[in-house]
Image 1: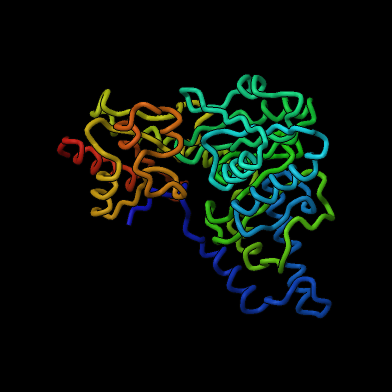
Image 2: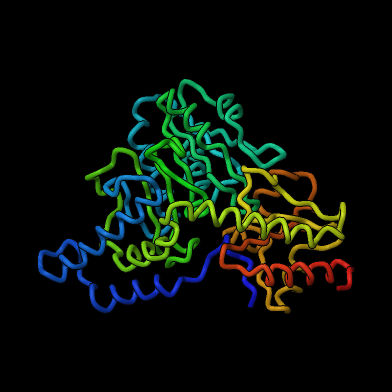
Length: 373
């Protein structure tokens, strides 16, 4: 199988799997227990959270293990809302139309409760600009939430600039960094990005499903997540990210993945104007996510055709699977063009994906588009 749906999920590394199994078999005690097995579990948890925090440039005490990105988003948004809502008689919230459902649901819920919510559309490049955020702010705005990397196109949002804008006005800012963690450098201690909370997920970076992390500013000593701690998940995530902790490793992989992206798109050059690639080819683009559409090829049919060759791709983010009117990003960019929306496909790979596998996929796409190899 050639797996080109890494933005949906990834396979656990052998080291991560071994760490997970070790805890489940030998260090399975509750880390809050006062006996020796509990102490061993606590030591593993402390060491694991320290490594996870390192990749965020954060203090371990401000990093809270969750059951995934969905829970991390929900906890962060509810925390900011409950902490600040009493300050305003008629509070106002801001988010975008292209967030993960775990974020969108919170704002939809508040809207149903009568809270004013501004939904920002991306511009034609797929970005949410600081100017758009500034224009939406009111003297009642208490919370803004914007993702760092868009799951369908790989576009990076200017969250550092947005965060600086909001920080100056003491407005809470949450960043969903699930698609960015381990793929671009993050250092919250240096304001990269400037935010009050940030969520990540393990299974997008070769860790286990059911594990995530929430960084919350000034939260040391707070129990933001209830229940027994998933120490096996923490240990496996820490092991999965270990290679990325080497100095310069993330930048090295970024450079390598840009080369893979360029080679893949160059191979599709015979399509000419029939090929449309969403996003940019500059520093605002995560290279491992390629969102594109090809005139004359419906996305779902192309997905099915490639599946027969053992090539796995997507027609949008996994949480939007099955939608017949296009992915959320395509709806935002092309609200009046259903044909283009339904032609959308997403190729997402990682640093372990072989150039030869991308080349084989490109050959099959060309064949489906009428070009013989």
